[in-house]
Length: 253
Length: 225
Image (cartoon, rainbow over all chains, first blue to last red; front, top):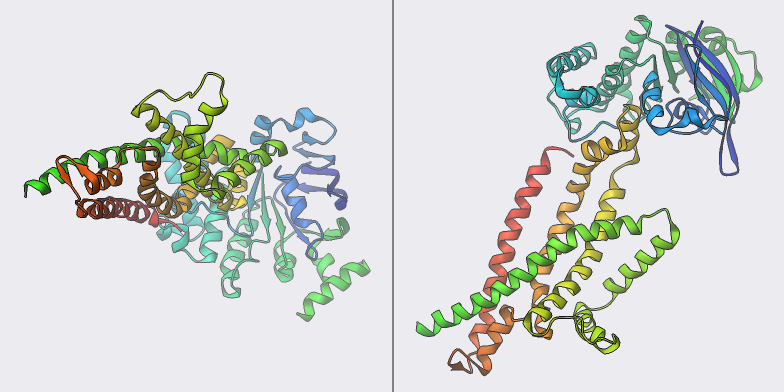
């Protein structure tokens, strides 16, 4: 059974069509990498899954339950969208940590706000510390974002996204805003999550990483899925000419 | 010495009026400015343009002129005559209204900068964590806005301290009015020059206190970037 089933997603920004007939599915425990050049629609697709953009048509189903249907406005009510988007976690390219909160507070804020009557305060803080420890940041719990390096900030952001136990964790170019020497520590954490069979969708420009860590790869170009398949095959031995051209540009740089 | 005590006494009375106008203006314009800033950011275009035009007119003309207009014009055009109560309380009310409108427009632009200055990613991060819009405003963006507006607000508020003296044009008996009175005659003295100059000490002391307060506030918000 597919955990996630995306069908026929279309999205326009004004006259520009950024997503055309996007369909794919994802099995529980799998990691899916989405690759493609800038402007190919990867990020927009991720934002659609997280209800940050509303597709013009198509459906999104999680565990066989349709949570979004462009043709059915009742699936787009604000209060329900708020709960439904919790199926997904999102790690942003620019971290988007809350600057006025410590690392631990960033991780636990949403849990505390959902904890009516503050009954589980201690348990939530324990869970937050546990997640930070898992990210190798146990000693940074009390630091504010500006006191952390980019790689550390991104790891806090990953912990924050994991805190709500999403079914699917999405990464939007998680290492693109980092200095090259800091990408390793973030990729290592994501690799660890893949080993624990966390269901993930990773938009990335790190081809070697996608090949090694992802189970499946989707190559997008101009808003369409050009090629899709097992990671090693798509990246190691692409069938489509456009995929080949894209990958060869990568190996040159 | 007796002269000094008398003058200080008179200046204190004037300074009390200065303070009154200062605090009344803040009390009115800080919330009104927020309403104006929402208007100037409205998605409803006519409201947005109306608000921005008002802000342009108010910021583009001298406060002194606005004081005259708000005090005199209603009485000239309204059939029932001036809406302002007779006497000093009416003049003070008119001055307060003029100051509140003027400062609300300046504050609205500062608020707008503060609100728009918080990156959209903060809102989005809150959304994907399932926070309500209300929670995002109060728990995520508000403090970041406050941090952004404190320095320009402190600037504007210190300007307000000095602007209160403009109210003298509709005979608000604030401190410069009280000091100037000694030039002609006041409290049995006449031809005294120094009381007017001495009012500067009051302004300096008051803006000094405000500067310290705002510095402390800025420092308090310095724990995050």
